[in-house]
Image 1: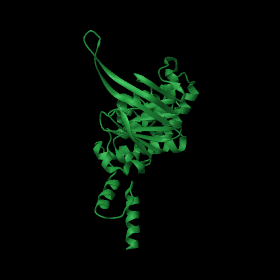
Image 2: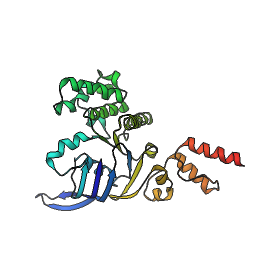
Image 3: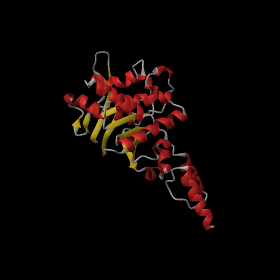
Image 4: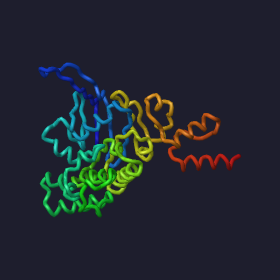
Length: 284
């Protein structure tokens, strides 16, 4: 679905005459291979390059060097731009920047309308997309009267209505409370499992990625770690050096390990920790 080879991007600072004054490398020779239908998480502290990488997947940015393909299409080919953006939709961290309609259903239908989709098909897509994110009963509401989590689900529905094969979520829960965060992540997981949509989640909330198929960790524009969640979160000290947290259950298990309890690495949830502790108790 997504393939990057030696992907590099430099932000340029121009002087008053429009000449390049300085450059800052945000993404540095990244190789990436993401298969269709997977739930992928990309982690990294602020400034690690993860959001810059996300903008390449939607062709908002194009590489300074290297190549990124979306479903076989090179993002540098201008004639493929709309096809790429239809295949790989993007949801940003502030839904207010993405919602433009005064009524929920009109906002969700805006994208398909711009693609020239027939009217009957637009309304069918609006209904199925709102239903998929659990917002169908709000179709006649004003987005301004919705909570942050509800607005974000409407933004996701708007992307879904364009029938993408992949949705990139760039820190979609950064501005939400815990309830809103859980709601948005559950929606993303549901779309991945039930609709087969490839999900690429950019986040710094560790609990949001424990059910991902694969995790990429970025630092200073490079992919420095990758693996499944257990493999990544087993490396607590390495993550700390990268200024990243781990799930609370993982951290508690790690501290108990240091105090002599023979717990396995990579415990991701409270339920898993309780189960391991009960097994240890039964052996005593």
